[in-house]
Amino acid sequence: MRQLLVDLTPLRVHRDFRLLWFAVAVTFFGSMITYVAIPYQVYRLTGSTWLVGLLGGVEFAAIMAMALVGGALADAIDRRLMVRVTEATLMLLVGLLALNALRDHPSVVLVFVVAGLMMAVDSVQRPSLDALLPRLVPREDLLAAGALNAFRTQIGMIAGPALGGVLIAWLGLTGTYLIDVASFAFCLALLARMRAVPPAEGAAPPSLKGVAEGLRYARSRPELMGTYLVDMNAMFFGMPNALFPQLASAYGGASVLGLMYAAPSVGSMVATLSSGWSKRVRRMGLAILWAAALWGFAIVLFALAPWLWLALLFLALAGAADMVSGLFRMTIWNTTIPDHLRGRLAGIELIGYGSGPTLGNVEAGGVAALTTPRVSAGIGGVLCVAGTLALAVALPEFRRYRSPEPEGDLPGADVGLGQDDLDAAP
Image (cartoon, rainbow, N blue to C red):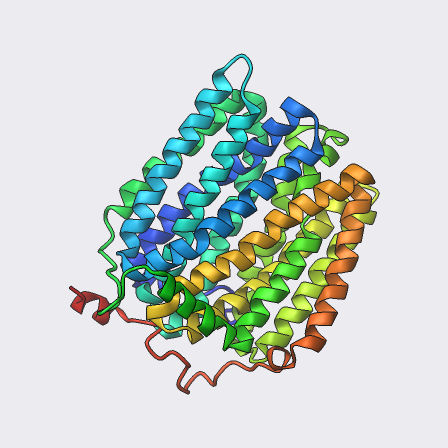
């Protein structure tokens, strides 16, 4: 049983990882409350599923504009400093949402603008946050640390949306947004206790040449390109989140909405807590393909489910499949990319796993406007499975990819620095 359960070693042994883990856990919990509040507010003000889906288009534009910039900055500037500055900026933006909600007639345009700005700031932050992991734990703890990070995310995605629906009904939108503001303040207090994480020695300043270097490196690695393309396909066709507000209105309103947002993360958490088996898997490319196909199949079942409890069950199954895919994708990224390129590659990764869901919400909302939410989800799930099969055929090197033997050398040997390395850093 111990071999099946998630490994807590990184939390026990590595102080800065522990501080970052709890800091992000709190702020992500607050952000997931806002994640429910924003589309709920747009739907309440407009009654349009299409406009809810269009939020994804705004977020996609922000990701495309800022992800590579954030990656270049992550390789050239202290990564802890980048996270602190962006967290403070996000706190101010959520405060602006709270003030807008106080108005007699809140501005929908302002909600869209702030949502776009928040995603832009998050896109600058995420590469630095992702690139911190190989600097805070040694290589042998990367898979366990990735599973713990996933567990932290799942707790936030379960409790945040579920509580978000209750808070909206109880405190209103202004009070709900202010809960998120408080979570940012707590996060900043913990981040201040972490040691600096300076860039690699001799790191070049941000430039288009540096961004191009990262893109060339990604294109040269078929296993990396496979992780990006498979995830983008699954999220573009199989992402049903834009459909939740309309579906929830038929089942009971805001409180049900929170359950629908939380259900995939319940499945993800179950997959994470039983992730000990993943250490024995070497055919990681094939595992990612199977998991992506299962995600699409579960979304089809969600669309066909006649009862709420069954729909939630299939959403949980989809979340478990996505988590399995995510664990292996994170492991491939963290164990094969050199540290001096980690930030830029994290920016490219963000385009992959960030643009898929945002565009997927636009696609789902648009198809639902022409048909129904259930038809939209069903079509998306079928196309997800078909796309995964096509990628399995088109990417044979990715399908056959095997992780290196545990005792062997990993590509990008400087990817993981131990605590002794950090202590010696200037």
